[in-house]
Image (tube, rainbow, N blue to C red; front, top):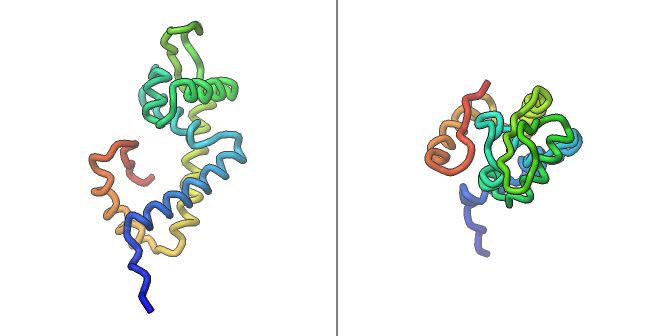
Length: 149
């Protein structure tokens, strides 16, 4: 009888990531938003005025898909357009107070799911896990890890 191979770190990280993403999406859906909304809000809060194309590139979606996401955020009062709409025009978009509240709620949802997923680990193990993962993330595309609050 052959033993199954030892699980690889990449396999474990993919599965944990998928679990966290699925659970965070479920919490956000209850609140009428999604990770795509949270991503767009996060990018715009750090760099107001980004184009649909640039926001789409950062999220890995088309400009048209990001435009639809931003229209949804406008309908929620989370994003305000400071320029007139028109084909080929750059949209000057900013995050409103409602958008900042959605960002805070989104990060609260992420922390809630993270707490549940990492529940088997004590604080020292969580710090060690973070210390191990930070160099893996260094130089990778995507959001920069932030210090815990």
